[in-house]
Length: 318
Image: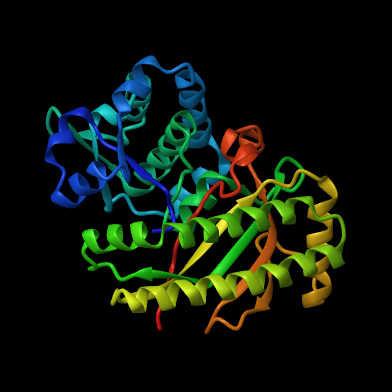
């Protein structure tokens, strides 16, 4: 509901097998199917993408993660989502099994990693923001515990701040709500972008706290208004959360946030540690922290140009 448009990776052969909800979203310009075949055959970023995949699979972090996983759980992947070089590499490692001419099975941790990297590159290519509903996928692809080689990024969490229609809400009702409340939703997205930018530009602890307090007030007003409007439209909703990476354009900002974290908990700052700002929205909290991103991603467009970067939602029960 909070996105202007969403997309997913759909092979050419499967585009005519989508359900009626996808057809309705596509007809209303709310959804786009992105072709992996086009990206993997004619894209100037293909070689860098393949190198990135190979580097990830050979990294100590991935080896550690894979050693803790079971090969029993499998992910079924359509073959056209693999480039020839990557599928050959997986075969040489005995990590892929052909099921038929169209589908292959890989260990789940391989599928999660590979498809997350593919989504990141294709999102960059098609000007979308990569998103996931599982933080472990973000951490597996982006984060590092090595402060020496990692690039610091801000980590902002809006916990229990986003009223969202429940999962069985008819798509037509959500589209109707988005059309009727287009101005309110646009303003709410504008609030998010505005305060993400303000946090990036903060130069002191006092300024960070002031921005967070203003942000808290704006989120309270926006969330309560959207909740009221959903009730008026008789749309049942739950409260979801959002987490985003922030590009720290001013190097001093990471130190300021880390200093705030340290003084707030009286311990050395940890990766992903956070401070909370209580909001009047029931059960909601705004958290800010610092984490370290793999250096090879620090020049990617989604971090440089998008205030969202990498987003996930978690359900908060009412």
